[in-house]
Length: 560
Image (cartoon, rainbow, N blue to C red; front, top):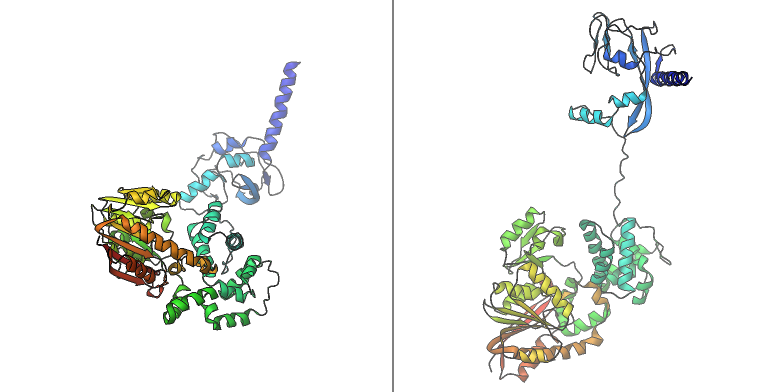
């Protein structure tokens, strides 16, 4: 009884298997193929006898698969004959009735007259197993030069000028952090680019346009219909719309309450006709600088409203300027030499400098060409004992180390310990190993170094009006209330720190200000008080209209 049950089960499975194999094969008149397994016909067994339909041809239907999923079906006709069947059948197969030989893409399997002409049914699963629509067969065809079936790819719409939706959110966030939360612009960049990782080119695009907004913030405020600085904080989106309009971009869809689109052209014309708005000069800056610089001020005001060139300084501890230019060129960065500054290159391409191999290898530092003139002005030599009394994060310190060829002792001082920590990182990258850092936490630090140095650099804290192009957000905060206190600090630092120079040693006092009250007047007051101990050897002023940032430097020699 059990044997009968097992036999019955096998018969049922056999019937089901036959149905499955025949499911994708249908003759032209609708009759199903014979029951003999498809593998018998495909193997071309000798003595296999056909028992199919008498029709001259048959139509097969099979599934078409892509990436493992059925995407449709296709049908094709295969002629039927008493001759042998040679080759796997596919939609390109033909049959030669006169000779009984099959012609096709595949290799001949059966041969001779005895081979059956019957085409057995095959399931769509066996089709895939034998490679007709498999990924492996497609790869083989690709290698053989047979193109795959074309994929339908939607064409991308051309990118519209202006900010993308994502960039708009990012720009709005950075402006809000700077204008509302009162963070310096560079800190806002650091905060948001730490959160949002974007390609270097896109990051540069965002930074360039935000800097342009801040350089002429009063201009865009007028175009946006804003009257007071406090309005900037409440209407960031109106500033973005005004900037987009001035750039000739389509106005983005932003929630900007009270924004008058109809009057944009009129307000833009008014702003362009007003010199202070056109050049992005706040009224407090106009008042202060016109009083100190007099007729020289209009030219400098125009220069401070323009985009700053991008300069780098070659690290001569590791390479020459020409070698650096060649190395950067290999990384796709275009530079040109700067006349009058033998360590400077101007970067003329929009490049992510800090992601280059050259930067990570310490071949250069980003530093304005005008700033690069200060360290050579100190006239250091290898083997000297040199003090950078207001080192900060070390731009000029690293330049001094290179001029000293890494020989001698270079002491970097600052009241901010975190800045000196940053300097130490930069020094390791630059290969400047003769730098010692010391935090000025008490007055004793300065007293212990009196008459200890061959050279002393005093890069004094100042208003920073010479570098407003690079810190464009700072000019929208009136510094006049702090200026008097700054001048007192400068005089005190020059008085005490200059005593660290040996007799016969030299001291350089420098600022990044263009105001005579922070520069020439400070030097005159110092010399009037210490004419028996110091003498002025040379002074130099660099103005923004020269193409560099604004700097002042004066060199003294200690006499007693």
